Length: 345
Image (cartoon, rainbow, N blue to C red; front, side, top):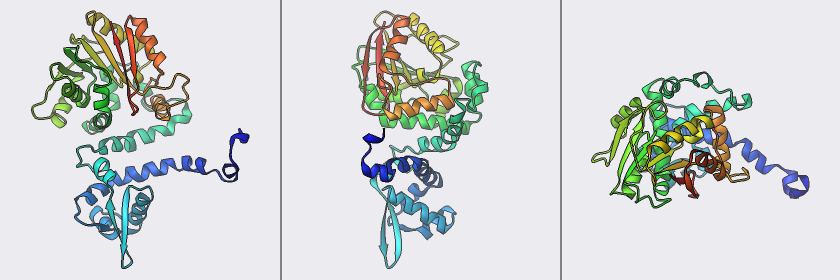
């Protein structure tokens, strides 16, 4: 391996140190979001001093000044100094994606990553003996209740899912021409964010979100939109019947469960839909040689510490779909976090 490294890399491990410190960079952004730094700066008509920010957010001035400087260092904030006093302001990226009030805010995703995912990764050296392990083997709704014990925890998870489709939803909805499917059911559709992108892209199709009753109730309470084109229906797609549809959407479902459970679910969908009907899987696909993308590799490790599943290359999804009888499998890499796989009965 050494012969492939440049002399400068041999003299000093810049890239390794960057990776070592990656968790610190993440926590800087997480902490600023949780404290409300970006919301405060977005609302302010002028740049603010560290003293002002610390006073508003009830933190120490010293700690806040260091945090703000680190955010400047990673180019999330900007700073200007006048008469020896530093004043901080947000960048366009921070205003758009990190402030809670933005229409494209990823705040909920960040809070979930910080408070739920981040601690779970301490278990990575345990080879997947995750904190939720004892819940598996239970019916899906019992798993759901055990993992998300309160409405607060449920909202964190649903916020994560909602943020994902703020970024990738349009690309997924338009990865293939789905206009031939008149009825679309998003199984486990959570807040309905992806389903709404489907409804926008295919206004002549009916789009339904099918999820557990607590999810549906929380979605309608906290995430529903006025004049919503999406219908919500409650049920358990593992243990109960699924509504009839021309197309079933499974977004970030297959990757969470062991293969036998996925095959059972896909068989149910195959038996329910008519010839010409199909399934759309939405997942972060690995390359065939599993050497990337890094995002998909990290997501696969996340399934190790949080659930029972894994990310797969295109051939992995084609294989399980073909086992059930689905054919005509098409794959679309969106170039973003999530990709699409369409298969027809």
